[in-house]
Every structure is written in structure tokens, then in C-alpha cells.
Amino acid sequence: MSVLAGCGEKPAADGSPKAKADKVRIAMVVKSLGNGFFDAAHIGAQEAAAQLKDVEIIYTGPTTPSAEGQIEIVNSLISQKVDAIVISANDPNALVPIAKKAMQRGIKVVSFDSGLAQDGRLMQLNPSNAQLIGRRQLEMARDAIGGAGEIAILSASAQATNQNLWIDVMKAELAKPEFAQLKLVATVYGDDQSDKSYREAQGLLRSHPNLKAIIAPTTVGINAAGKAVVDEKLVGKVYVTGLGLPSEMAGHVKSGAVKEFAIWNPIDLGYAATYAAYDFVKGRPDAKAGGKVDAGRMGSIAIDAKGEAAMAEPFTYNAANVDKFAKIF
Ligand code: RAM
Image (cartoon, rainbow, N blue to C red):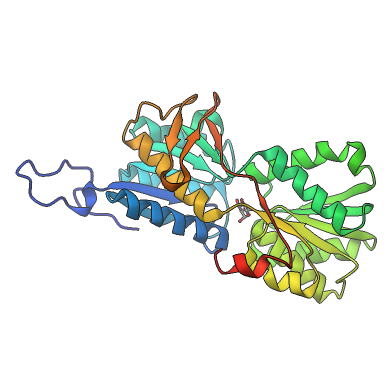
């Protein structure tokens, strides 16, 4: 993290060269470090910073995905007087008081990926529509197992805003006739940690002998579940699907543990979130609920009345295209 003495001071009146501290400092606070999804979002943030020219990115997050860890980090970012915080929240509500404190100090708080409750941020940038993301995962599971059977969900942390939203959609969709043959037998949480996710996946496979599919709506979980299916020698009997990074999933598609999975472009998400934060820092009149933000090469993104915006539809990957995208994210 870069903290420069005198940060927040105005540029010298004599026109002497601006210090780095005079750049717009945007802190990207992720659920946890070491997650390839957020590494990709960071690449997008840096791309945006390079285009905007006067932006410095501070990339940070706790070592494990906890709200407490993020609260500590936001507190320190308030002391550092950053200009904006772009956060993927580990809890929709627990971070609201600290986010409000940041906003009271003039820091523009935008959530992306996993949202903060409305009063804790100026805008939430969703990767796509939650209904679409939830439903797509059920369709992939159903198609992988030939239409009928037991399924389980391996999620991230139990308070994650985004996963919980998608799980709620999946549960509601399961009541529809097109999914009547699917039976959800368990929902477990791997906390976006590879080892815990692996153990939870193993637990599902061992305690549900008739399990046909694991849906993991997390890039960490789906990767761990793929490994567990191979290690338990259940390829062809249990299929893993959900949201994954092509770079991490190509091997699982080859092993046969995974037929199809989906994701949006995490680089674009980090890029657009950074642009959005910049618009708020610059006080652009359209940067408000009901308005829009300018997201560089992504064009302009509309913000709805609740301060939420959404990017593109999730894309589906399989043996035909996974290698191509594995080179990108
Ligand atoms: C994990 C994180 C992230 C989520 C993706 C799909 O990397 O939980 O928040 O959007 O999976």
C-alpha cells in the first residue's frame, strides 16, 4: 500500500510538478487476496488507471474473506484519505457503518461484484443480472446430469452478498416445472478458501452417494470441487458446474469433471468499477442513482433508481472454447 506524506494536500500554487499523492487514489478492496478472480479485476483497474492517467490504484483485501478484515482495511484507507473505495463486500450490512464513515469524510464508496446495502455505497456494479446468473447455473447442472437427480451447492462465505443473491434465485427457480426433477440436498460454504472448499466438496460427495451435480457459484469453490470429484474417482458420475475462470477450469473440462461453466469478464468488471469510482470522485452530474457512468471502452453504464448497474450476460464455457479464454482470465 502506498502512503505518501502530505497526501490530500493541494498541488503547489507555483505549478511545481504534482506529487504522486495528487493523483486520484482509488482503493480496490477485494473479498480476499490470492483469488484469481480479483487478480483479474485488478488488471482491469490498472488498465482503467492507465487510460485515465491521473489515477493510482491501491489494491488490497484481507487474507481470508471476512467483513472484519475489510472493516480494518477501510478504516486505514480513511486515515490515508484515499479518494474512492471500490469494494467487493464480504457482508452486505456489517460494512455499512464504516462505509458511511468513509463517505462522511468525502471518500466515494462504490461496491462492485458483491454489493454493500444501498445506504453504504453510492453505486453497486453488478456483473450481470442476478436472475440470469442463478438460472443459468441450474440449467447447466440439469443439462450435465440429463435432467434429473440430486444436486448440492458449494458456495463462498455464508454472508457473501453476491452468492446469497444467486442462491436465492436458484432456490426460487427450483420450484418451476423445468427444474422439478432436480433435488437440492445441501448447501455448504467453502469461504472462498481452496482447502476448505475442497473439504466441503469431499464431504458432499461422501455424505450424498446419489449426488449428481455440485453447483459452485464461486471461482474458488468450483475449482476445488472439480479436484474433489477427480480425487474421489467420481468423474462421469458427479458433474461440477457454476462460475469459474477459464484459466483455472480448463483442466477440469479435460478431466471430464466439468462439462460447462459460466462467468463474465472479471477484467472488464474491475475496469468499469474503477471508471465508475472516478466519475464520482470528479463529481460528474450523471453519477447518481437514475443516471449513468462513463466506463471507457465499455461505454456508458446506466444506474437504476436503487443505485445499481449491471454489465453483460454471463458467458458459457466448455471444451470448445475454454482453452481460448484460459489465456485471458
Ligand atoms: C469468487 C468470488 C467472487 C465471485 C466469483 C464468481 O471469485 O466469490 O465474488 O463473483 O467467485
